[in-house]
Length: 53
Image: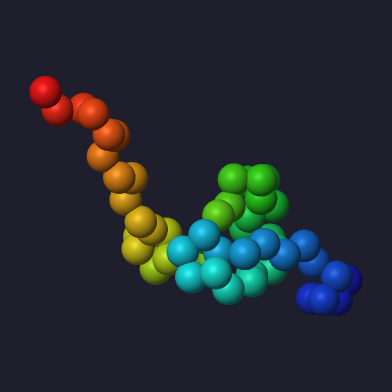
């Protein structure tokens, strides 16, 4: 199998495309980031509006 034949996704942090890796075989549906660095740098969730009284 050629690398060009592997599935691709776009990183949720940096927006770059990345390809399937064997270590992600069982969790490919859940993979959102191209690297550990991007996973750590992911944007935090904004606070919910109207939460304070």
